[in-house]
Length: 118
Ligand SMILES: [Zn+2]
Image 1 (cartoon, helix red, strand yellow):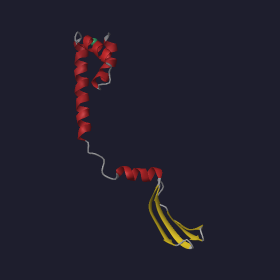
Image 2 (cartoon, rainbow, N blue to C red):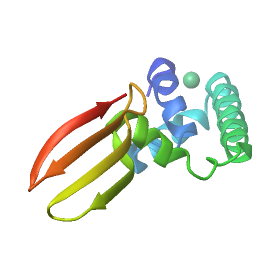
Image 3 (cartoon, rainbow, N blue to C red):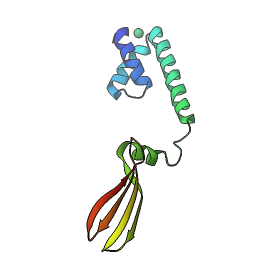
Image 4 (tube, rainbow, N blue to C red):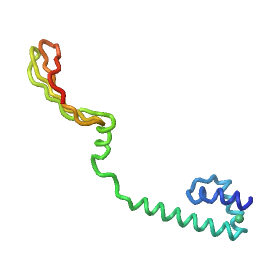
């Protein structure tokens, strides 16, 4: 293995993304080459620091994913239905990526008539 080949594999090794056979070839080269050895040590130190830094990041606050889903996909937040089969009023509040539309409809004998859209 050449130094150029080794330098191409060092970041993968440090990220634990190198196959066992490529890792063995790299280690064999590094055991004889002090330049690549220094680069491997530095890459592994950086990888360790990055993993530790990601481990210290706070978790996602509760409700974040529900809020994201509401904004991106749109979802109903509230629905109120009043009345009977003869006549009724339905009020809906939803969440979409463009806002929180409020719609209302009046139903008379099973037929819906939109009366409100904000
Ligand atoms: Zn080398």
